[in-house]
Image: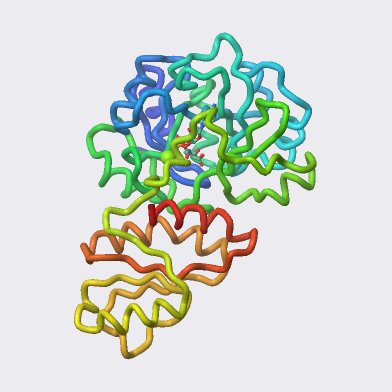
Length: 318
Ligand code: TXA
Ligand code: MG
């Protein structure tokens, strides 16, 4: 099938209430018709995701916000204008037509206009909102390649559209504009500083009890192998201490592999946050497959631009 045929085929599956995994610039999503509760329930089933955890609706265009949200503040249009299509989700008050299966029973809804060309073609062909969480089982690492989805979800998905490796590699920034004070619920490629530069200072409170965000569970984004975060110095020490079991340790580091530790599975990561973010989830999947006893990660810098990467690493460490 040519790509266009595939898109039409995918739109048909969605119209029939089926599931289609598709690439976005952040991670692969597991899509269903946002207007079909049976299809939405199927997402929860396939992901093994508890009910009450809301799904993000993907839209072709910001003008479609009205279909799902009400009382849209000016700040939402400002952010949409600047960062859409792109890796940012906005949480707004849900309109009364918006399914509560979609919102996990809450009266807010998360919305995003993705920039990946395959996602955009699919949204245009489907011509309505597509609900899509990351296409992984609940609590696991988000997929950044089509084969990650196939390996993890197999025949539970009708079709996986292959759009190559995701450019950002980390899930979207989530900005909550549903309350009086805007706040970030999940850091991502669009940074707090970029958002504050256009809509003013955000609430420092990112840990409100509502709305609920599964991404804030500490066990989220976790590989199966226990992972610990350490400083460069203590990485050296830990490796020296476990000199006889080197082969059972995997390391994620921003420095080159020392010859003395050539027995460990060593992944040298980029020292730019953009590339590190692109590589992170696929590298963790790769290391997980080695079935080592543990993964030791050398902590990246703790500057604001590394916030999204550090957030995912902290969750992976549980
Ligand atoms: O980059 C992304 O956002 C990817 C791609 C596929 O778009 N999607 C994604 O979806 O990461 P998911 O479901 O894995 O994570 C979305 C997060 C969840 O933690 C969910 O609770 C939160 O967004 N969320 C969705 N709607 C919300 C709402 N109304 N209020 C608060 N949090 C919401
Ligand atoms: Mg997810």
